[in-house]
Amino acid sequence: MKQIMILVMVMAFGAVYSQTTVEEYNYVTKGYKIQVESGLDMKKGYRLVDLCESSAEGGSALLNRKATMTFKGLYKELDKSPCAVMVIYHETGFLDKMYLCIPHWNSKKEIWDLYAGQLEGMSESVAKSLVWGLSKSASFFAQNN
Image (cartoon, rainbow, N blue to C red; front, side):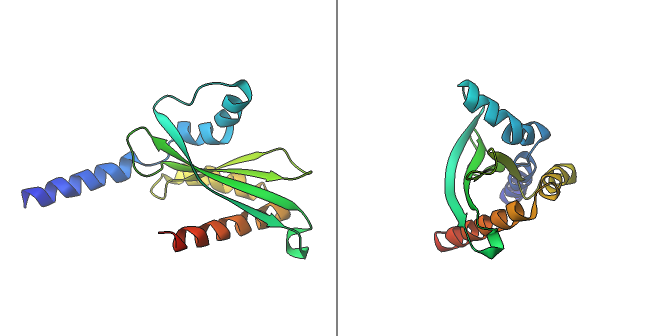
């Protein structure tokens, strides 16, 4: 019984600890770009792991645009699962890179509201490309896990 209680407490702590914070959200959506452009070191206490890359091209549904989406996991130093997923969206010839933060599934509503705000501010073509990229990535992970 004691071991079960310890396991439950560890799992509960892990779920709370892994939530995306406002600081992490801001790092993914703003700070990372500054870091890369300025040649700064990685945010202390974190690491970024490349997850996958996806692309969307042409067709009337995507308004004849080509977009790439690079997915990176933001991990706290010792964690085995990401506290957030960074999506770097780039539409060739149309936009600068856009940095999105998909929060940890167990994050507070305020963090998910920030993400929803980013989505609401997108044009229809960007949103369609992003959904396409997310769909391809989900399919990739389903086949490889």
